[in-house]
Length: 517
Figure (cartoon, rainbow, N blue to C red):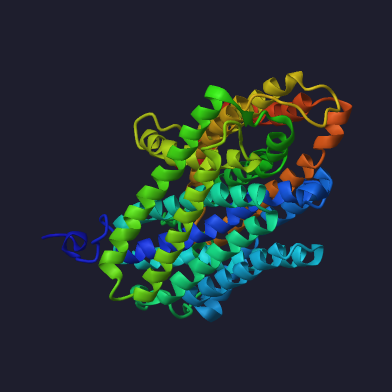
C-alpha cells in the first residue's frame, strides 16, 4: 500500500504544498523589514547631524538596541497565547504584520517620540506575527508529519533570504539616500507581506483559522517535535532539567557576544574599517556585490514564478501584490548596482557586512546538516562548545585586526578582511549551537512541560540580547581606557573559556542526560 504522502496530490511545488511558499514569502518580507531596520538602526542614531543622524552616544544607541532585540523574544509567548485563545493564527499574523508596518512608518517620521512609538509597535507586532506564522506551517503538515522537517527547512530559507535582501537594500537606501528612506522601505515591504498574506488566506483553507480549544505554548513559541517518552523516574528527570538549565545559562553568553553584530561590530565597520576601495580591489568588490545581489534574487524570483503559475486563479490578488513587490525589489537592486558599478572608487556601506551572516548560513547550513546526520554527529555539549569556541575565535580575529588602533582613537582604517572572517566564524558557531538548542530541550523535558521550558529558553535568549546591548555600550569607555583590541578580547576569552569548560564536563552531562542523544 502506498503511503498517504505518495498518494497526496497536494505537494505540487518542489515537493511541497504551494501554501508553504505563500508563508515563505510572507516570512521573507517580515525578516526583510526586521533585519533591514536593524542594519541601519545604530548607524542612524550615532551618525552626525550633518549625516542626517541624531548624534546619540554609542552607549545610548546600543542600550535601546539591546532592549528592542531582547523584548522581541519575550512577546511571542504572549502573542501565541492570544492566537490560541482568541483570534486564531491567521488573524494574529495579519494583525501583527499591520502593527509592525505601522511601527516602521513611525520610525521613518524622524522624531524621538515616533522612534520610541515605532520600536514599541515592532515589539508588539512581532509577538503576534512570529509564533503564529510558524504554527500555520505546522498546521499545514499535521496530516503529513514526515514532511514537517523539510517544510520548516524551506520556511527558514525565507528567514535568511529576507534578512539578506533587507540588509542589502535598506542599508543601501539608508546610507546613500537618507535614513528615513531605509526605515520607510522596511515598512513598505512589511505592508506588502501583510497584504500578500491576507489576500492569500484562501489557500490555507481552515488551517488555524479559528482559535484552538486548548492553549499549547510549545506551538505558540516554535515548532519542535514533542518528547513522547514514557514516565521517567524523578531523579532522572531532575538531572535532565539541570542539563537544560546549564545549556540555557550558556545561551545567555553566546547571544550576548553574537548580537554585537548589530551593535559594536557595526560601529567598528563604520568608524574603524577601511571601506573605501580603489583599483583592482574596487573591481573585485563590484563583481562580488553584483553576484550576491543578482543570483539570490534570481533564484527567489524563479520560485515566485512557479508559485504564481500554480495558484494565480485561487489567490490572484495575493500573487499580484507579490509580483509588484518583487518588481520593486529588482528595481531598487538594479538602481543600487547602477550607482556603484560606474564609480572608480567604491565606498562599501557599513551595513553591508551584516549580509554576510545570512549569506554564510545559506551556504553552510546544508554542510552542517549533513554532519549532524552522519556518524560524526557530536553530543549536544560538544556542539555548544564548538559554537562558543568559534564565536570567540571570530572576535579573536577582530582583536588581532584592531591591534594597530591607538588607544582612544575615534576612527581607523583596518582591513575589512577581519570582519569577513569574523562573520564566517560567528556563523559557523551559530550553526553549531542555535538550531540544536530547542531540539535538545524537546528531548530532555516531558511533553507537558515543553511550552514553559521553551518560554524559559527564549527568556535566556532575551537576556543575552539585552546583555549584548549593555556590554556593547561600554565600547567607548574601554577603547578610551585601554584599546579597541581589548574590547574585542573580552568577547574572545569568555566564550572560548566557556567552550573549553563544556568539553571538560561533557562526560558528566552525558550521564545526566540518561540516554538522550
